[in-house]
Structure formats: structure tokens, C-alpha cells
Image (cartoon, rainbow, N blue to C red; front, side, top):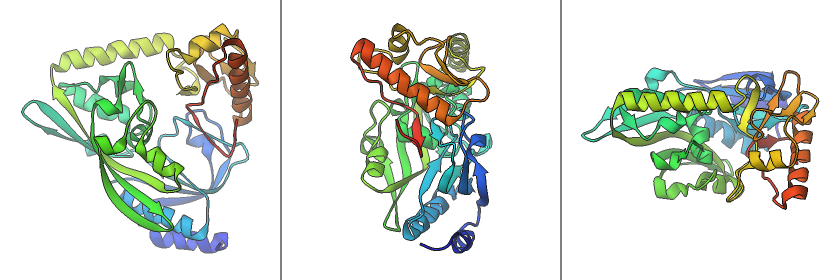
Length: 322
């Protein structure tokens, strides 16, 4: 493994469109607002972001440098001690970079993975695209949403995606592939991209294409407004969080199980099970990742004792474990 100084120079030789920061606090890049510094932090943005990020990962594999691919940071917890490796941040694109092609009965949407999912869904809905409204309030990036088949209000990425441009990096070798909908194997909070990662390949989702039917723009925007009102009334949006903290168990709901276990409002430091929605763990101000993880462990144990159901985290843990 190269020294950190040599590794930094190798990074700078690769990065043409992105930028490099050292010891960057991850609390600045996660919706929970927690996490210590990453030794190396590479920000990538724009049309060639995925390709360049893949080259950075190939270098990490060659030099045995730990790495993590970050989207909007809306579904991840970094350790308080930080991350002794490299974080690749796929930064949001501008809204004008979302390309929408009008067809006879549908809209085709082409977008880089760094684009915000909510902005993408809202833009096509304003034109009258129907079927993407569910995503307007999801805070993550397109890449992260494809990776985990994000969804809300009975809709999910699987309903609208056509394909995804993906870079697979293994043993320092980069392969570009286009995954069609069937290739992605999308199911509840799962995709084939996760399977590749679990099997040892690094995965960069560089871009995606969606297609939605044409419809009435006012009806689409009215539905988005209705879903927004539901979120505001039922979810603790005034606090930092990662949205739903736990996966939905089969034929049940995490929030319901947590409430039945008597944990509404339960706190560890400034980490709290939301009193408004028990499916959310929130940061009331000064919570640490340690506080949040300790709280999550307690929730998992208490729910299991009360119901016999073991909750699984939806949030991804980096440098910490349950």
C-alpha cells in the first residue's frame, strides 16, 4: 500500500473533473448530521462523474485503500471516529441536466446518478408524467435510489426504470455495463447491484433512464402536494434523520412494532425514537452516531422480545455495526 502522500498524488493524477478534500467531516454530508472525518473525500459531478469515480475505485483496489460510494447521504451512518479511507461523493447535478424526451404516449427521462431523485420526479410530473409522483419527496440521489430500489407511498423505482448505466470494478479492472430492468432484479430495498457488491465487486451507478406515461400535469402535481402534506403531518421532517430507520417486516410495519414495544419517544442522548412516527430515529440536535446505533440496538432487542420479529436496519452503517 502506498503512503498517504503518494496515494494523494495518484488521486490527483486521476481526478480531472472532481475535487479532493482531506479529513472531511462526514457530518456535513449525511442527513443524520453525524460522523467523523474521512481521510480522503473525492467529489464527482456531471456527465463523466461515474467513469472518473470508477477509475478512483480501481486505484483504491490496487492500493488496498478502503472506499465508500456516497450519494445524498440520506441513508447512511458513519462512525464518530471517522473513516480511514476514501469516500466518493456523487454530487447532485443541476436540474437542467435532467433530460426529458417527449414520446407519443410517454416521457423518457435520462439523468446522471448524482441528480436528486425528488427533483427528477417533480420535473417530469410538471410536464404531465404520471407514475413518478411517489418519488418527489424522497431525499436521496438517483444512483442511491436505483441501488436500493427506493420507494414510498406504494411506488418504487422498479415501477419506472428502463435501465441503468453501471461501472463494475474488480481487482482494479473497470467494466461498463447497461443493466436493463430485468437485469437489475429489483425487489423490496434490493437490487442486483447490491448482489455484485456483496460478491466483492465495487459498483458505480453512473446514470439511469426512466419512462412514465403521459397524463394530466395538474393531477400529477396535486398528487405530489397531497403526498407532501401526508409527509409533513406524519413524519418528523423538522429533525435530522435518515427517514425510515428499519426495513418493513413482511406483513407488518416497523413503526407499529416499535410503538407496541413501548418505545415511542425513547432516547439515548439526543437520539430519539420519534414521537410523531416510531419508524423514524431522529437527531434532536447533538446526537452522535454512537447514540443512534445504541438506540437502534435497543429497539431491535425490545421489538424482538415483544413480538418475536427481528427488525433489520434500512440505514447503511459504515465503520459501526449492530
